[in-house]
Amino acid sequence: MALADPHIPLLVKLAYTAFMAVLVPVYLRKYGPTNFLYFCDVALLLTLAGVWTESALLLSVATVGILVAQIFWLCDFFGRLFGLPMTGMTAYMFDAERSRFLRGLSLFHGWLPVLLLYLLNCTGYDPRALPAWTVMGTVLVLVCYFLMPRPSAVRGLEPVNINYVFGFSDERPQEWMSERAWLGVTLIGFPVVLYLPAHVLLLWVMPAA
Image (cartoon, rainbow, N blue to C red; front, top):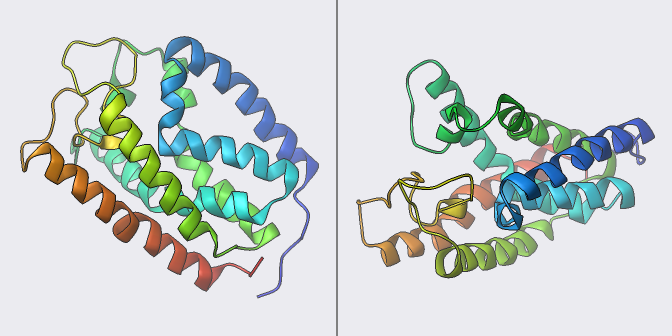
């Protein structure tokens, strides 16, 4: 498949940069720097670098890392919106302690995958994204499990249970299995369930970089 346009429009670059110029300082002030260990926030930063360098690899890495996960996020969000919550993934979007402005910024989970697909249609998909994100994602999971705060029913806005390394709830760890077993599930399951299907889909539908 041929590239639709090898160049990313300047308007797209400026609009995305303006959004990030708002989100980054707000998130740093409200949530702290550890919030940027979330896969989706790492993808935001990779996308910012990717749109200006027009790097197919950076944009591909971001897309592989979040495409499938954001589909789950959207299903949970709309399920909770209509009174049928699936997991605790998007409970924070309905947390009255967080301002509507903060929650509005978090709606990027819905439109970022669409933007990334558009950008990859411009630059092409680089298959090196799968091993690159697998390594990055594994490191992030280990850092969040061993060094970041556990789930807690008593907390402020500081991120806990980053990347769901203790289960889907921020209030308490999952109880289906031991914590180390869950860690093993994430280390093996994330690449198999989240990254690999995105890679296969992008190889199929996107032009080559």
